[in-house]
Length: 123
Image 1 (tube, rainbow, N blue to C red):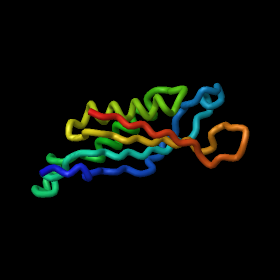
Image 2: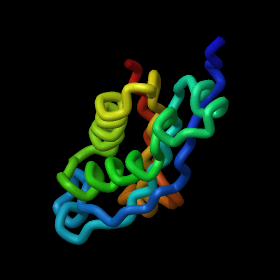
Image 3: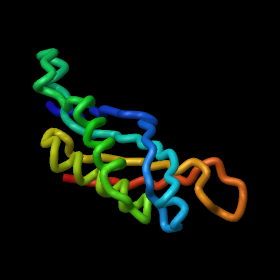
């Protein structure tokens, strides 16, 4: 019996990148924080204690780093979607990826600690 409650989470992966709609954001860059919730059936992994039967979160982190630092995006919505679709494509056990991207110190006319977007990608 599979469990819909099986989730691998990566919290607050921090990268320096050059995303944003304003030219200063694209030239000066800034910090971006990423969370990923990977919904998958982990029964085989927990029963076998075998890395090949689960989602290797080190490889997920490497994919996230490549996506965040490899291309400039105007919108963190597009960045989150690229991360989510990359995880779905590259890790077949993942049935759903919930990606949150935070942009600390986003340029708004007011005081905001961070702006966050959440995107859900489903196989």
